Image 1 (cartoon, protein in one colour):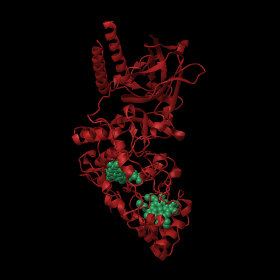
Image 2 (cartoon, chains in turn brown, orange):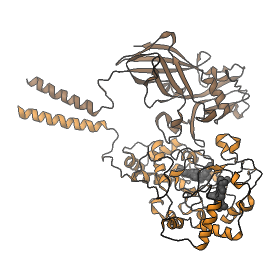
Image 3 (cartoon, protein in one colour):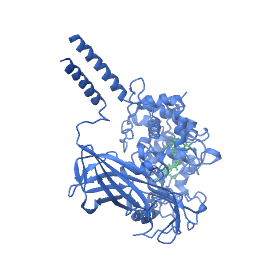
Image 4 (cartoon, chains in turn purple, blue):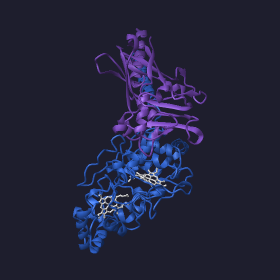
Length: 256
Length: 350
């Protein structure tokens, strides 16, 4: 008798506790976790900032000192059904110099998903909605102050072909409206008929590769000698974006 | 036995209350209870195109924090160039009598500093409309190499170690986090609250004053010749137009085209409000015209008509007799709102 009374009180306490901290502990949902990891590579080998010396399809050599891009509006999908699991407040800055930024996780409902989609860049709404925080904080040096809007993808480096002071190569690619909108919707079906099986309390992992070598070619030839610097929205930025939009492939799926 | 259970219950409750409190992290000792303010649209005015306070609830605490930031040199590299150094209240928050304003290290700004009021009605800021939201506007002057020459990171570092700011951010936002978003939202609350709607013109419209004969004549001329761009009651339609100035060979400022990249936007600038125009000489985006008389003379005789992007309304210039010109100046003077200059709420805080 005594024992069960104490036990009841203890339970009561736990319950109260849970309800008061609802935001962090959410019992009784049927959600699992999906983790996305982005491996940035150049021609198949891991991107080495500052030290790697690379050659583009036009024989121009270059190094990479910065490589950052926004991934937003991440979604998992089923066949024939539009959106099924969408990450809330889905904004991530993938920064090759910050290892912790190369992967992120979010909760999704239990299901067997067959597609992954996201926006490469920051959707137009957030480009016009005033001061943001988190991944979108202007502190991250991805916001144009004189022409409001986010730099969606930033690459900086050097190349003997640049012809600029210090041989710099500088691509700040952005622009979220009109004909020169660089936002790219990336939709991929998981390869080999695989599914991402979200199960309660478990984590499924999706690994993607981003091949920087796609930057230079197809459909548009981008030569460093011809375009060493591109730091404003416009037709040239759009051409670069048309190329890099093809840089992603899914390389691995692990269901735990 | 029953007594024991009661005691345990009370203890449990006390513990949960305590833990519940602990779960709300970062909160100061006092509960967050800001005084909300109401932004009022003057009678007869259009609603602002977007509600700038929708995601930034206007509070007395937020306003006061923004006011402190606006007047604080900490936002600039050497401490000497607060926002208020270029946006002076006695000049309707423009830079009085300066073609260009002075920034850090003897630099001059690229353009003439505009007056600041009724910003809630302004969809795009800066002469070229490059800034799409009032909240992100301060990022431009803070980081610009001719203005405050700071980094946001550094500004935040200076604010974090100042206990007055810890107190004020907590009062404004509920906890002591100091970040760029909060700083920008507070500045926006202050700037967005600067309203001007008590000039003689407004009083005439409200029926509490009447125009002199000259002012009334000037008003008639204004309505016939200027109102299509400098539209009442804001005295701007917020559009971008070429009003016939020539390209300055040194500045090479093509205005709106800098933002859109479109040659059809070459030499177009945002139509400025003519409210408080007496307080804000010199005139135009580069301050090239020194007096109101010169500005009007520009429309009468100075418009360079062989420009492809010249506004069609101005292709024949604007004809006006000398007397009409004098009366127009009288009318434009009636747009001066002394309350804006005297209002202590907008003045430097102690």
